[in-house]
Image 1 (spheres, one colour):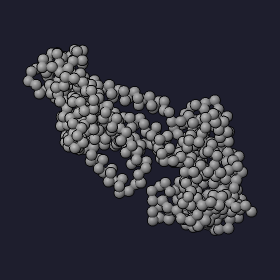
Image 2 (cartoon, chains in turn yellow, cyan):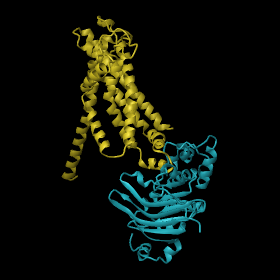
Image 3 (cartoon, chains in turn yellow, cyan):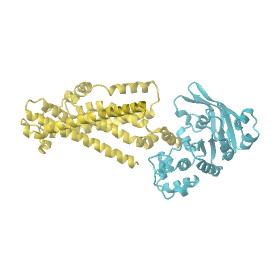
Length: 285
Length: 253
């Protein structure tokens, strides 16, 4: 083999090795992190951790209010943000005439998605807690998170709508369908898997948020479950944050166990999204 | 003589500041097949899309002049383009069956989309349209299969069936065979033959042979101008205009 060819092959091998390392590194780090959390969490890993309320004694403390709070807040958030986000994206993509207004809105959307979550927290505190008088309850928290999630859902929906070929829209319009008939019967069903992914992504984001909820008044020591929309509440990240700031070692085990529960919940949600997507792809109606 | 089904009068159309069609004048008799020929970019597609008001869906598009369908101006302010498109159906260059729908649902999609399909009609309408589109025998045993599973030529016939199921008066075909092989093309051409008389067909085509084979009248468009329109036989044997002759003899285009 001539030297130039040999050199080219060596460079090829080197590049491949570098790329492989780059691909493995994050995986290894993630694995290490998970392992570390699991080891730390071990003393607190019991089934009662899921069913107990927080307590002054770490060994009898549990994450129940956080788990229930997270599920409630996130469901409310999804209920608020997904219809509005999907609706707004549908309007922008399918109905709004291209022009200055649409450009202005789209520019702002890209910026909104990049605003730090603490800013949404401040906005939520001013707007929902004080101005609207909702108090430091579930609804104020969900509304705040909905603001945060809205741009994510909207942008994802927009991308999903853009993947629908124009030939389908034209085909339906040429049959004498109205814009809305085209959108509801052809475009949205086609884009549904993408929209769902975006919605789950946004909702997962809400699941992990802590800062805005601390601002609107989620507390880390709640010994009851929320009973109404203005009930005080906590969520898993807030609860974890609370435990981490306690000096006793037992509470850091609780925090680690809380992280495990949080990660499992997120994984479950993403898995559900994957299954749903695959099913929609296979059997579209 | 009865009024033409379509009467295009002083039609000008374009996008923004660019005029694509200049003062077109054309009459199309009911039940005939009219071919629109011309080199790429001459405005054939724009023209055919002004006939069912699909042209205006593109940003910046505009239309001036009149297009009369049975003596009624399509561009009159009281005409709803949505209702108009049920009278003037369209088949596109690339077959575009709805990928998430079965063959049967594709055929009745127009009626279902517009909410004009009553229960129990589906089977009869689907069969009638598929027979008209010469596709019935090939798909009758698998009407529940996805429309996208058919071959390209079958998909295009499915799209024709879909357009016919709405029961239009006019059928616009925008280069319907440009994505098909010669055998599939021949089947579509046979189909056009069989639809003549019942439907008024306007066919945009790249292929002069196709125009000669299937149409009764041929219009030659060049740079947005209607150079000549006449009986197809006459256009291909004794055209009046020098430019038409140059084009059909392959001197340009």
